Length: 210
Image (tube, rainbow, N blue to C red; front, side, top):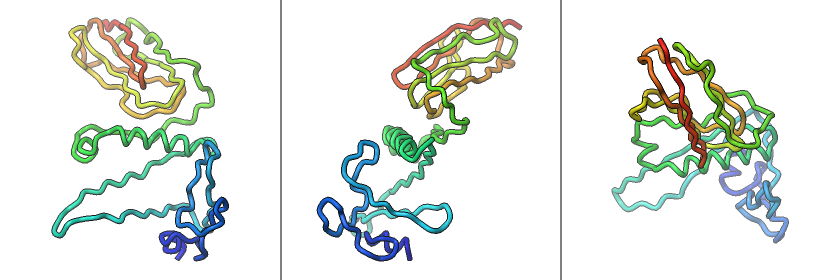
């Protein structure tokens, strides 16, 4: 019943939602911006366990027509409620930047769920460190820092510019990260690892000796 009332633009108890600015009933309980403090946000709550309510439509369709609809459930758990909303907006922008055809029919995987433990230290600038050990055989560690949340890729190339490994290809929060590169299937020689994070691009050289 709570969900049905909310779908009709009412409170969970079935009462009209009153806009405190106009003092008139409204079907839009979230007309404000909690980040900037503009507008207003209805202080709704639920008495049950964790969950979500989703509504969509209406959809205008011609007779015998078909229509593709894509629904994205985006997790965004920050340190505070407002931080969670900020993360949700960043991840939503990422999803919107990817074409529909790529999301629906492409072969690339887009990981936007943050799996690392929250990092309380936020770097002041981007940095890509020299791998350690270097030279290495066959495993080495690569570390980097990102002062902003962004979609990040970390790839390895040979001296001819051919991609030989993708170590990172996902959305990450601002923070410090590290990953291991195992080159047991590669031959000795010079390789390059390149980090892309937002507008940041950095490349470093490493030496594999077997």
